[in-house]
Each structure stands twice: as structure tokens, then as C-alpha cells.
Image 1 (tube, helix red, strand yellow):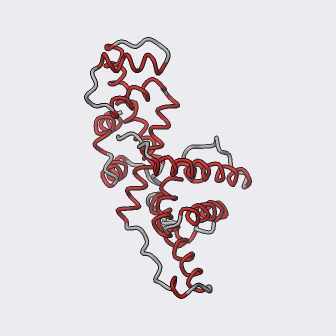
Image 2 (cartoon, one colour):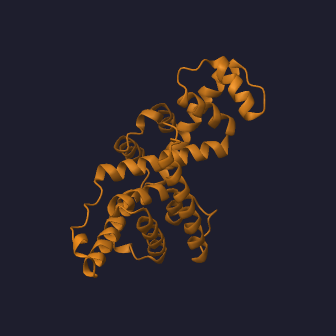
Image 3 (cartoon, rainbow, N blue to C red):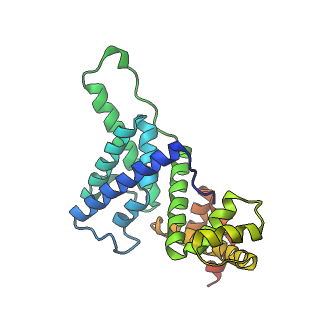
Length: 246
């Protein structure tokens, strides 16, 4: 449940991802897709995983500008239906995306090798990112989207939880002082403790929603398996148990 980093590299990546998301939104609208439509549609899911797509393509081509261009190409081909043949009969949305991205990256490398280039650049194409790298990027995108959903749903919960993660040893009283200044409303130590408990619970529920939407068949078994595969189950074990009992 780590909060986002604030280093220069993270800042540059966030800026680039923001631009790509804007471009993808324009592509969706150009294809007549509703951004505010059903959350379960794959076209709407596309926007959620900008980070995973970009990180994979960046690892595949080792060039931020080329990766951004390929992201745009991916969005257009995705909406045009060019990847229909790689979609599994049943499975996970991330498997579909991973196969489509692998094909796109391989096509990019083949096109580069077929064209004229200086002898000093006559080298083999870099290996595609590993499955572990892709899963890590997908996991990070899910966490990023969960943090975003928490901020939209309850800014106070988001602020309290982020502050706790960034400062795990900070006392509740000091947190209350920081949050009072940050949120512009009075917060007591007791408020902080209660908000933290509720924020953890809300984050877990939102995380389950994010993972559920990425599954073609979101059965209880498939959901738990995906959480384990992404190393996310530890964040929402109790929430999953409560959901299964309903």
C-alpha cells in the first residue's frame, strides 16, 4: 500500500502518463466511446492501466518517446479491434493486454531492424520485459488507481492514510496537527485513529473493486487467485472474507 514516490524520475513519469491519459481519452471520444460508461467494459478499463502499458513498452524499447508513441498506437489498435485474435476465450484482462503489448513491441523491433540504420546500431533488439516485470507494473497501476479512487471517494481518508504510510512512526497527535493544516479543518488524535481504521477498510474495498473489474469471470476463486498472483491479498484479506460471506 506504499504511497507514490516523489523523486525526479517519478515526477517525469507521472507527467508523461498524464499526457498519455489525455491522448487516450481523446482517442476514446473519437471512437465514440463513453468515458463515464459501465466500469466493467474493456474500453473503460483501458484508461486505468496506462501506467502498466507505458512501463512495459518503456522496458521493451528503452526509449521514453518511442514508448509514448507506441502507447498511442496501442490505444488506437485496441479500440479498432486489431487485437481480437489475441484475446483468450476466458481469462484475465491483463493476459490479453500482455499478449497485445508483446506483439506490438516485437513488430516495432522488426520494423526497426528492417530499415536502414548505422552499423554501430546494428544490434539485437532488447529482450522484452519479463512476466514478473509486467505483473509488477500491473500491480502498481492497480494500487495507483485505488489511491485515486480513495481520494475521489473520501479526501480525508486519503490524506490520513497517505500521511501514515509516509510517516509510520508519527504519533496521532502530530498527525492531527499536520492534517488540520493540510485539510483546513480541525482533526484530533481520536479523529485520526478512527479515520485510519476506516481508511484502511475503504482502501481494501476499493482495491477489491479494481481487481474484480479486471477479471472476465470474477468468481470468488478467481478473485483470490488474482490477488495472490499480484501480491495484493495481504492488503485486503479481511475485506475479501467479508465480501465472500455476503
